[in-house]
Image 1: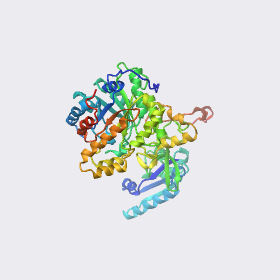
Image 2: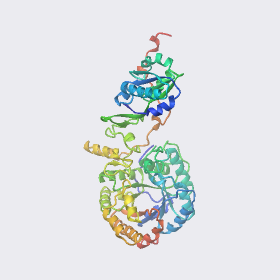
Image 3: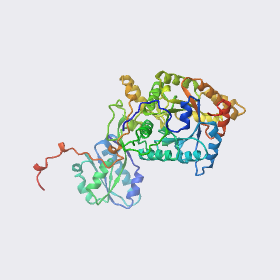
Image 4: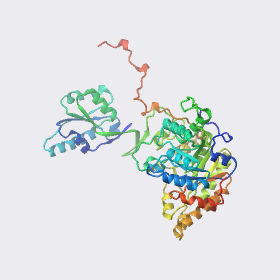
Length: 313
Length: 230
């Protein structure tokens, strides 16, 4: 596998709406939709209809926190059928390179134009902690694989692909996970592997995020990829506390106290999200926000409107 | 060494319930070092089985033997006589030892007395840690002697995941993040640029997820022409 097509600035060539918005220089908005723990697709259809006009693309999580849910590919098709623009999340935890490449071809054939490459939360956290984690390839390798399939028209094994998947490729990064230098190196590696956009872990620690972005900009990576800051409106102080225990999440204590004191928790949660959006928007190198309103997708239209980001381009 | 953890005697008893004659076989190699299958543990298991046998009112006849190495056929000879009248052999060797015994005595039931865990070493008295996943394609030179295949919970080859916090692995707070350790060591060695190199997908065909592995080295094989013909 000839890996690492050094992040070339490439004209929009995937038919992705998200790519067009970003390359046109608009401040992008993506929204996360969490598929249900059941075979009912109506909830995804409703959410897609609800958020599609308030976001440029909608992420469908892939068994997030290692809990079994309706698969991201099927969820992406529900979104497509309801006029949305899915970002198919793919983790390397549950599928090997054969299944990942196969799913990507299938997704592209159904009209999916964006894919987000992740390693995935460890199975130990989910509802099947005894499962065998696959991790045949990692997220950097998956990113490079998608680019190789798209541009070089080759599978990992080197065999030719007649109809390559035309998808816009993204990856994730956690600005709060550890030495900033290591996190920036890691981001750079993902960009070099071909990540055209990056969606970050939820930002509550705005100062930490600012420091990370400064280092990212100093290394010049913001010019080679589009960085979307993760935003999650908290529903309650308890929700914030829960998130503070998720590996890799940093939640300032004063934010939890602020939610505790608030009389209208939902309003306060939306206000916090809005403040964070306004803050990250002013940071050099940030190209958009990725709103993950966990179990509260209904909040997305109002937050986007309040932020002055509606209507979308 | 090969790390192993003793199975409970009750789980062994459940398998030998109606039997009379047992051989408890230990090994002087790895399982002796990790204190799960040496002479001492053989004696322990044998005594517990003996008590259990007396309690059921139908004592076992138990032979104890600890060989130099269960994973070498020539060292299994001391078992030959004992196995003639054995109903079952409880091997406290690793999974390799159990299988070598089973191959040599195909008419006798062989029961593993330990769970084989992996390749590791002693960290402190009573604590052993895995270090090698035996993937068949060693990359330790590039990762400063820290194995991400074994020590990263996701076996990532291109740096840490997003779940590590303050140097701890997301999968277990008592475990260090392997990639953060690699990062610090690379930094000390002035080799941070190694972290920017994208490592391609690994060839797992060399690992345990491929077909059963076999190491064949003709240069150390006996010269067949000078061997006496049987």
